[in-house]
Length: 150
Ligand SMILES: [Zn+2]
Image 1 (spheres, rainbow, N blue to C red):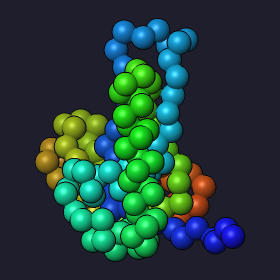
Image 2 (cartoon, rainbow, N blue to C red; image 1 turned 90 degrees about the vertical axis):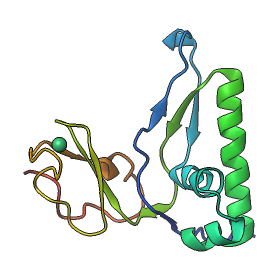
Image 3 (tube, rainbow, N blue to C red; image 1 turned 180 degrees about the vertical axis):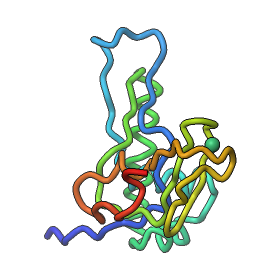
Image 4 (cartoon, protein in one colour; image 1 turned 90 degrees about the horizontal axis):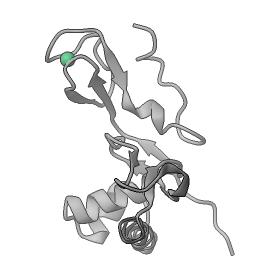
């Protein structure tokens, strides 16, 4: 019996959404889609080293759900590496907790829980890019009312 899927909390967007193998012609390249919530499971468990229980709490999901998510994520990453496929991070039922803004001038990344500044805190340029926008398809909150225009 299918239950409604809960929106999963993801702390912030990945800094890169696509990974391509070198040396495989584009026409032969197959793609694997890793959802943003699978990415977050991988980040929490394998990168940050959280126990599944703790990681599940951070994402607002049950431990069995987290375990399923991390298993899927690992299988996808493994087959991407073993089979030489492109990995694309996109989609999923999630909501970001923070915004990440990249400065196009100096490359610095900054995290914000509320409002992003108009100018880069490092170089003071106004050439900022909100990374959240690239993943905000489907559900979750819409435009946050800031960060567009400048
Ligand atoms: Zn800058």
